[in-house]
Amino acid sequence: MLDKSRLRIAMQKSGRLSDESQKLFASCGIKINLQQQRLIAFAENMPIDILRVRDDDIPGLVMDGVVDLGIIGENVLEEELLSRRAQGEDPRYTTLRRLDFGGCRLSIAMPLDAEYTGPQCLQNSRIATSYPHLLKRYLDEQKVRFKSCLLNGSVEVAPRAGLADAICDLVSTGATLEANGLREVDVIYRSKATLIQRDGEISDEKQELINKLLTRMQGVIQARE
Ligand code: PRT
Ligand code: ZN
Image (tube, rainbow, N blue to C red; front, top):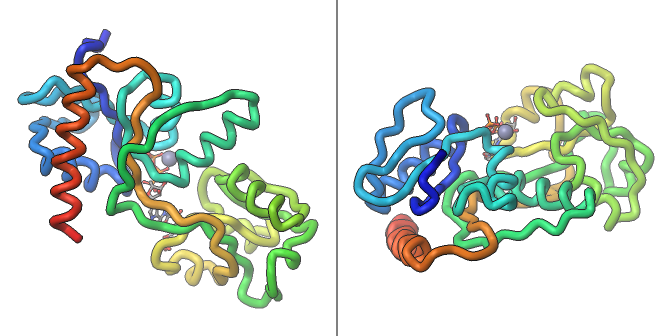
């Protein structure tokens, strides 16, 4: 079992947020030896354990109180929040700081030749996405009825494969959409990586350490701006 007196932080093991998360820890003075294939890394100079997991697991680990802090894309966090609420849960966490990396947008995209003059054009369409709750929230607000096609990868090929009329996926440069003959027609959510803390009791020692890390982070991020 992990030592509960040590601060537990979850970060993405490998992916778009890993390098920057690692750099942020290093610039806050946390010395960690991140050996490949290791689930847990122990800081050498502070009472901190770093849990390295799939990004999708991070919101739940924080909401369930398994870890104290987590670094996660707001897109994944918000989708998990909506998903849990849809199941009747009341998930809780606190956002400590929005971070300066992992920026992207969740957008609706359509084949180049499809007409789009507004969300009403999506009425009764089928939309492929890995973010069904964020998409539903947006289209419900627009009073647009649609069917979703849940895909956890290769979302951008769905229209060409005849699986969907449109997609709702993350975009950063737009190159993936372009390469698949798609056009971004509407941005529904803008995301960055964010640092969150679990709800509930926390020891004074841990809270002091969190405050110290936050102050350091503030300095690091301000210096980069
Ligand atoms: O293995 P694990 O489950 O941990 O990782 P993952 O594959 O689910 O996630 P990963 O590493 O791809 O992304 C982690 C987080 O990075 C996302 O949840 C976002 O918060 C953030 N992020 C920032 C992005 C992008 N930019 C991004 N461009 N996540 C994904 N993409 C993908 C997008 O899905 C599409 O396939 O990149 C492609 C589009 O990029 P462009 O540049 O061609 O527009
Ligand atoms: Zn993931």
